[in-house]
Image (cartoon, rainbow, N blue to C red):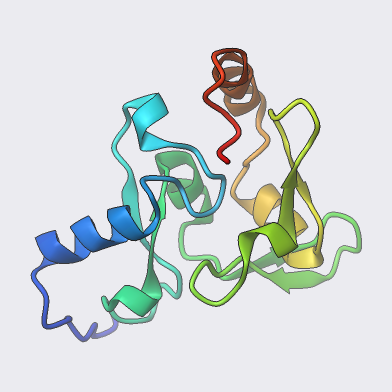
Length: 142
């Protein structure tokens, strides 16, 4: 395991700051912890990077476990490798948009499409859950 430089902050403080900075939303698929009631994960954007806030983001379990240690994936449209979305250095809306019914994400760029595919963001069980959230007026996030 590579050496990780720890922040001056305690891990509990880092976790709190990551949650608050993300407004309690997965920074990849925008799922809200407040809707699902599920624990969120603190993801290392660069898995070989350190534990500083610049290398951490909030991720739902589905996105974090599907991403694993990946930093790139094939763009399903072109077949070429593309970097995965980096919430610290990229703007979400430049790479993703909600489809009109609010249940599926559309990738606007190779990075967006590769991220959706690798993280299984539009898998059936997640889309089915989003349909309930949309019906309840809780999704997509504003």
